[in-house]
Image (cartoon, rainbow, N blue to C red; front, side, top):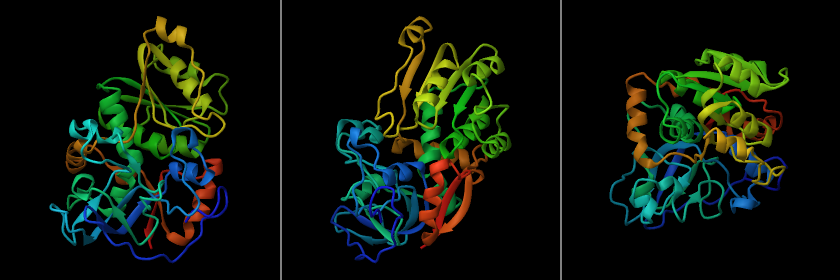
Length: 349
């Protein structure tokens, strides 16, 4: 539970959730620890109306088993293995009806709002369960799914849908945390040529293991964007800011070749407050596209599961250490200095 911004999370005993008519209660088998949880812990995102308040149970990358079913729920039963997106849609707005539930008009972020207590707990409720719950294939494990839950599926949507990635594209990934490493693996698996950019050698080494054809040590480089351009024969076709600070966003845009596409995945800290300066004249003259990407539409899970089943994608490769709930506060604090590699997953509750 979030006690206060920047203070260690506390372990508390709370009432077991009871499902509302449209809800199910899911017993948590695994939940990823995401940098977005770190942002919530820091008190970020008031500027987009998503600031978690003290008393919030965090956790938004879950997988588990349905334990209780509300009276209006029709498609789920106790014992079903499920996951849910972190962006809980209402199922009825124009975006939900057209397959874009990730940008639902009344989206509720799991683990960031009091009406949606998160999955750093033994159990959690899910609104509009028939719409938001996704049944897991038998060959997808809980920890693997927790690794998929936010960062992997976000990276997939960013590359496959928003960037319209093609085989042979040169892809620069700025920031090799969980979402960045996921993007490296996905880009490589889909036939592109990823270039990893980070300030830590251990993360660059992990990126190479996941398919990065080149790496740039941004801590040592005078101009990381220029180094990417040299490695990418004049510039990347696609570049992703997977961190969300002014420097990585600008480097990402500056890494592109003419007519390239920048995809913004990382959300900013309180230093930027949601506002970053960009070279709009150069972007205009070079016909640079700037695209935002948030989560992944529910309708894309089927394709993602198919690519996992046939071995094209292996999200288990991104999963880092497995934790108990009691180890979570220390792991979250390590993100102050980007001290985690891959996707840590809580598996003991």
